[in-house]
Image (tube, rainbow, N blue to C red):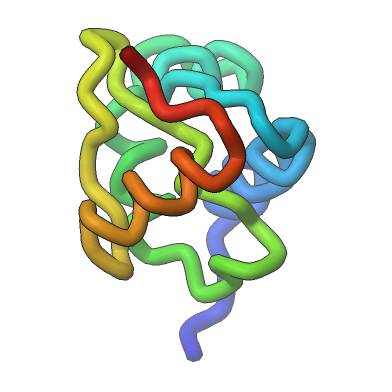
Length: 89
C-alpha cells in the first residue's frame, strides 16, 4: 500500500467523524478540511480508501442527492445506507 498523502489523511479523518445513520456531501467534506474547491479530489481520495471498515466513505454522497460512486460498488453503498437508515430520498 502506498503511503497516504496529507490530503487523504485530512479527508479520512473528517469522514470518520460522520455519525452512523447520517450522510454528508463531498462538498461538505471539502469545506471541512479547508479546501472548498476540492470536491472531486475528495471523491478521488474516498475512491482510494483502503480503510472502508474504519473510514465510512459510504456516508458521503453527491450534492444533487445521488449516492455517487463507491469503491466496493454502488449497490453495496446503497445497501449500507439503507441499513443505517440514511439512504437519501
